[in-house]
Amino acid sequence: MKFAGVDISEPKIMGVINVSPESFFKGSVKTQEEELINTALKMIEDGASFIDIGAKSTAPYLETQIPIEEEIRRAVQAIKTIREHVDVPISIDTTSAKVAEEAIKAGADIINDVSGLKGDKNMVKVAKEYEVPIIICAHKERVEDFRDPVHEVIDDLKESLQIAYKNGIEKEKIVIDPAIGFLRPKYPPWYEWDSKILANLNMLKIFGLPILVGVSRKSFIGAITGRKDPMERLAGSLSATAVAVFNGANIVRTHDVKETLDAVKVAWFMRKFRM
Image (tube, rainbow, N blue to C red; front, top):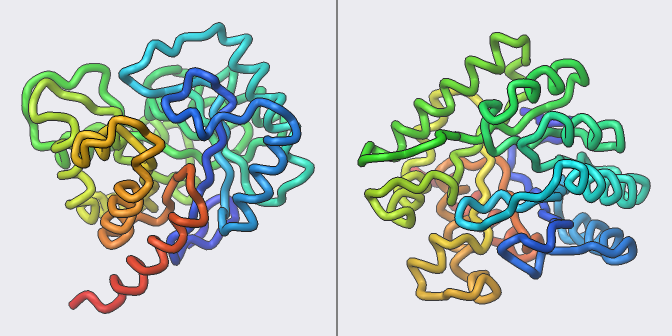
């Protein structure tokens, strides 16, 4: 099984670099050319198979709107800066088709759309035109009353996949993401919602698609552990990563490549012995 040319038959790591000062985890923010290059190279040295660039925070609980021109400027500058220094696929984390297109022109290989192709109707057209792989996130504008989290995610992904398939996106170019941290209903509490999805991640295998999970230092970990500061959530992130891999995650998106790779290796090794 491959995604963007990378063999993901064993779980792989996607290292996160943000060039958005408004991002929730300030430790992930790199804005200077030298630190961008050094961070990307260190992530690859530590075991990252992909690099993900975010030019605008997508955290649902933050006020993160910036002009699209600024998001494009940040994304293009960051990707051009690191592209000539790394040979792993680079993904652009954006919900804007215009940003995605400019990022691809600058050297990005993958579109990572947390709106699941539902936010910008032109996103699927850009993916098709440039023939790039896409990460499709479960997305719903409003999650009101209680529904079973796993089946809600499955239904949301079905909608997004219909958009992709109807527009000629090949199955081999798609990875799905259950949107940990993004779907926030009134009930149950978001940390229970996210935990139930991770505990039953294997149910998403019904799509026959690789699964990407991003749990790194997110607020549900803070809610469970009492760690309000994202800087203190590494141990909790590694625990959630192990659960995700044990239950079928193929790619783990993280700020902490070296430590996460160890958690992935242990969980993957043990998973092979599951009866």
